[in-house]
Length: 433
Image (cartoon, rainbow, N blue to C red):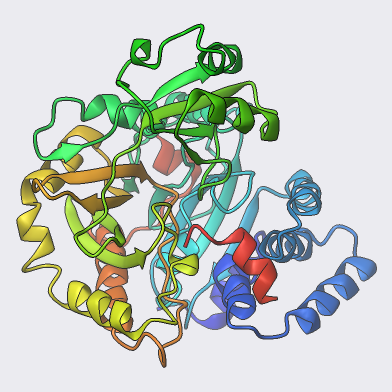
């Protein structure tokens, strides 16, 4: 095992940061982030080249919902350095190279949350659409491709597909093309004929076509996958329900367009997945090397379900149901939907991803979304949600085991060796939790 002095020497060319997990947890738990903010500001005042301070400032701004300021600050950090280091626990665990790209919390797999309770060192190496090679990555034991699917990341993923062609070292999710295929329409098409899964057909639609629908110049049943209202509309590239609405008529489309300036949208049929009690239940599940792990069950009175707005903390009976679901997940839910999970692993072909889904009365799994960038975390209060600790520990251990299983005799890899050739503010940002 390396001495502390040896580790400091090994990581001296990396910028140490607190990172997303530590910062978001502080704000999520209602603690005062201002002392750390003040310390970071003092650092950049003393040294304007302190990239690590700028990166953590960007994370704080993003957590507080100041997206524009966060993007500017992150851009400044990345212009100074592409490499950042997060040390978890003792720092004596795996050295995980995380290939990431610029953007908000939905741009990359939030691996910081998955490894928060480990002793791993996370080495964030940022790439973009112009990155020429990966020969200069930090020394590591295993790599993880974290770049998620989005219109903004398309060119980055296409570049990574080229850069990773000859990568021979241990790596997880070395499949940029499969990540690209996680677009909403891509996922829907992949499961169009899958008997165990209903993934409502999702179509890109231009604003002018929606104008024609609203004026009844075009019939709704001429859109692939649609027969009648209600429908779901959302702007391209949005997450966490931003801009998503249930539309019940042509007039409602016209009203929707007055509120949305975008040029292109997704359109899909609305599926009523409410249970006999009238409530809507949405499960978030992580899939690691083909095996599903429970992340959360949200129960809501509204069809658009998000955990933070579902009232789980306020309703003891909902927490009791979630506790039972999590405790019995492996023997019940995972068994009941074994065919669906096998199909997900087979068709998506990724080592790690997560889904949001629901159970339909006919036994199928209703698939809302599959993505590598969904936030899976253990930040909820142990006092209010005591049952989550064990389930999340199981999930995190499985993720760390998946990384460890790919290492080669513990030998470090570097560059060419591996390559071959405040509460209100945080709610607004992390409602995807």
